[in-house]
Length: 263
Length: 232
Image 1: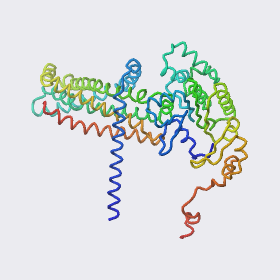
Image 2 (image 1 turned 180 degrees about the horizontal axis):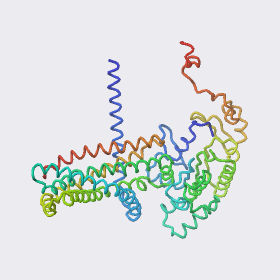
Image 3 (image 1 turned 90 degrees about the vertical axis):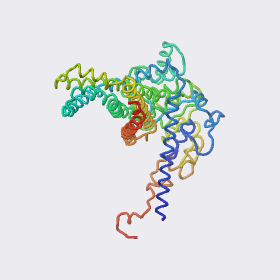
Image 4 (image 1 turned 30 degrees about the vertical axis):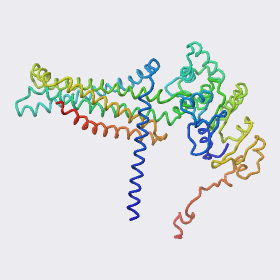
């Protein structure tokens, strides 16, 4: 009986601690995102972070999307061939990529490449007292360090997703048309007929904005509230990748459920 | 001053409102610092400076940019004036020649001198030093002692030094508080503290390995029990 009470007590304590963390993270996001803009001073910081977070993630996104598109083309061709509908390959590749694979895989790659780097960078700034020294110089680190990174992540993700979509479709084209001999006109015209810009492309980009927001939020929060030791930073970085990946996959289901009415 | 783990740095962080006290109040210049809103706190912090143990320089900025950072953030000074002010500040700490270096190219002592120049760039009224002498070679330690004393005198600052380096701190301090386990255990001028009769203060000042602060961390079991030589 005593053990059962202790178990319930522990469960309750963990629940309260979780609620507290969610509350702190929510306030943290609000204070970061809803700041009074000082655009001219903010812009250089934002551009710098767009380069580090967005441009430097391009290589992994381009290479991954090319191979994913090619694999999708190959697998799709083999299946469609059994039904004699290989001409539908363009449609299959485009809809798969634009609706699901583009935002989800870009989000996962983004979490692994940029999210982990953000957490490690901010965590190291905590450990070396750089953030404390900034506060002592009366400069708000949320404005100077966190906000540019957060907005750069939110802006970068849809752009990276658009690049992913385009390259993956090109990869499907290379395999389907250039290698396996599907007619290029059929490939593109079927794709054009099947893909709706507002329903498919825009919804995919909405997903990517949500994923960008959630991944960057998790990354900067984990970095800012890290235990300022080597193992603390290591654990925070791992948490960023794990939480971000789970959040992307979970939110993808929820967003798809909302959007599916439009298809 | 006080032994490691006595709460010196915590006290400094309470004074600068980096930490919030669970009870009690901290007054800086007659202002309850923990009752201030963020904006007012930042306003007050412009008259405070702090030298962190690690220096806490921004690793992505050069020495020059580190010292220029507070000026760029809080003033609209023209670039030529910032340039001159930064070089004057670096000249004061003897590192004008290092203005183009990155923090990774500096020694520990040089990092602290650059951090000192940065902390003093706004001529603060209150300057706080967190273990400024720890881990420094004798030459660097001598340089830091001289700089802290010299700058304190010429700028007319109020300085709080947190340290466990007895000789260096006693050589420049006007008044010393010795703390242990979060409590003041001795205070006075350097001479008074150096001749304090309290056993714990004497142990700290003379650097005795055993005494009121024991050499052995308290163990739950007897030594012989931990070695498994006795069952009870």
